[in-house]
Length: 230
Ligand code: CA
Image (cartoon, rainbow, N blue to C red; front, side, top):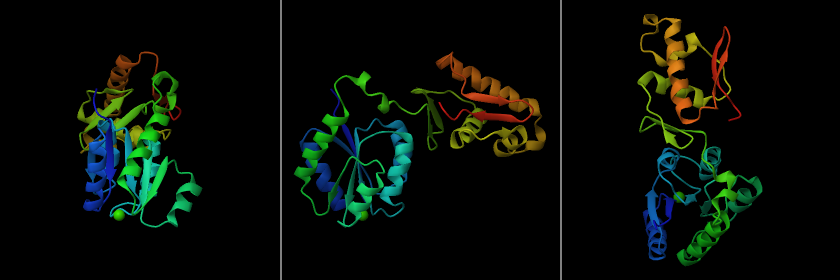
């Protein structure tokens, strides 16, 4: 059996080291990130079991990051904070964290609490856990990859750029002009029907994965959008 992977998002190396040591000796794998923003793309490609998330990060506030993670996945999140007064906010805002620790804390206690969270959130019968299903589309910008219903799509450069635009703004209708501007280096070179051809190819690739689902909507005379309620 593979070990559960815990992401440690903490800018202080000494604290991250302590946590990592405690978790590793208890049979977990760990991955350390000193900044918050890379978490989102990492989650798209890495099946982590839980995130330990420091609130005071150099590049983004941990609570803000938590909200963004929640748009993508239900992965359990444990907050770390240096200030007890922040806990009221964490709890009061109900931004979707599963637990928190106030620094300084005992790594042993943290490990025990993490085990409890994982027992609670990972019932042995996975079918009872529909909320843990991955998002329909997962965009991994760094790797230039989009996953659809868990399967990696094999997209041309233009198909990727068009779908990326849709994923960022579900529900928004994009005219062909708007799509061309956003995607083509030299829009003047292309005709309307080029967009239509790429959309057609995209739909074909999506249908190969789920024949009964058409996530792209045609707005006659206007353009295209990605369905919002996927
Ligand atoms: Ca910090």
